[in-house]
Length: 553
Image (cartoon, rainbow, N blue to C red):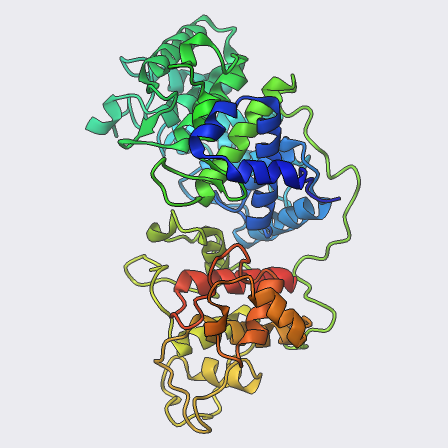
């Protein structure tokens, strides 16, 4: 089974549409169907190795599982295997303070028919029974706890360690108590932690609050609060049918209101939410880039993975409402991969022909992230490698995704990624045994992953170019058991699609072709840029893609 794709003629037509032209057709059945299928294929491709994380993880899995698009069961089994290893590595503690981590994973597992009450022997619902810890991070906590618990109609878990045992009514009351005078909600509004910025309704938080309250409309106070919040959001909707957050119109804010209306059973063409003939869906589709997902802001230059995954489940919610299906978070109709048994996927075992010394690296630092990678397209790759100790950040807590990487640093990443034991052998005169990278450089050299600039020198501080990285990754791939041989004709065919392929050195072209053919490098790029220094984010993405292809994640 594979992602279903529409006919070439339809996709070509979509690609040729201007932004304004597409918006006019956004609400039509054919356009919505095409956008869902197209974005599903893009999400499946960009999050092909789903990890535990808010990007490239749970939202991608949830969107695909609720989209109705045909996805290989192995994809979901692979994700579940990652979740099991992750939960085991952190001994069931996904985060000490951010309990939305539990809620997000619970939602994804529920969407694929897996029981969050027994993951590697841990009950991921139990933390949500702790009222004080769940509300610590602001309104996000009780909102997502309710959405997660209600998605599978789970009983409120008993938490013996909780200072205050939570109930659903307590979470509902907490949300209602934080409603702002304007009718909306903000992250810390109505709490002791509120700042001046929390005094005005935020579309994202208000939409999420409405989603959480949707199933409790039988309560008079909830129904009253809901109507006030809807009135507030109707007023805040701009003339193009969208919303601004932090001063800029963006796609994610629109998504949260779309999901809120669909959870409440309110049509997206409700007159309260149509401005100048534009519905919420019309507005969301102005951010859509056929074949590339969604943009974060209207003036953004390209797609953004966070915006894409949220935009995707937003249009899935719209499609489900149109088709009369249960809403996004009402999951009694969830797919059930458990019912058909295991897919036979042996996660992390490596390929049959790999070098015996190559092994999968276990998760040792679950939950690690960096402040400066939030909007990086490689965030899931960076976090996945960091959680395994393969790649690291700086002392100031940053990763610096756009910085370059030295030859010594690359050697260290390659050796760690393949689980090789680092040993110092004194192979190069400019790599003293006292340097931190000595063992990594010597080990990478002994396995043929890297070579020196001469018989005796390595130049550890030299910068790695994109074509050099491709060569080294191809050598690592061969060590992992992948067939890296490509004949001359195939090399020309693969590289000829890039405008600057002739600028690549002859010695690097076979490796570049292999990396593109294997999706270690993206064929959606317009240029190879072979002589430019490769960035830390690009290295992380290449290594992450390699490990996925080599079944070492």
